[in-house]
Length: 202
Image (cartoon, rainbow, N blue to C red; front, side):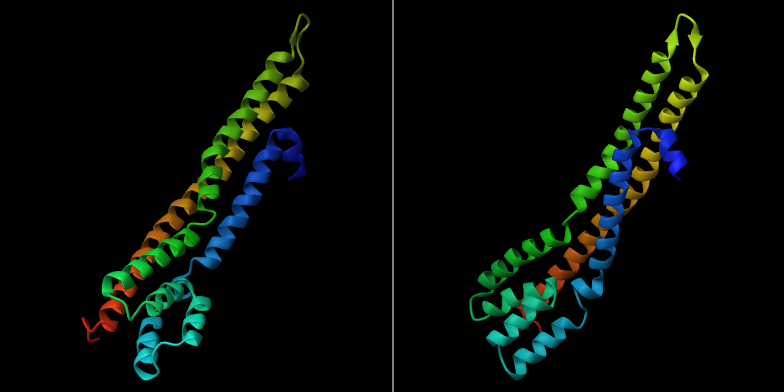
């Protein structure tokens, strides 16, 4: 591996850094963006049952705030459950926007890495080409310098694609996952509002 890095020259280090950051972000988002952690399927029934048995309390709201992103949305709704449905929905929408922003955390960075990695690879290619043309002199071309320039050009191009392709795949996957989780939280929040205000019996 070290031989490949040495052959690729100094431009490869920016791609290595980008790959490390991308791997860290992908691992973090894989752990965080789980449906059971973001929008637990049983939470709505638990909240409705608690409200029917004991009513809203500060302890319940605090517990929901610490539970999950969906829990924080429910907490905003429970705080305003005695208000008009429109006000309760507005509070839930505000909490929902904050939760969605939390779900999208680091995705911009991952998308940026996916976009710039081929450009970094292209930069390495240009550096390699400069070395190749710079090796030409009146006596002819130096084979060692030519080989080194070609190595820089090819390795950087390949590594740029190796970093960009998985980063783009996971970026698209996480975007779709965030959209799906956002819709799920919206549906659960609507059910809570309708249940609290007697518009839904289940």
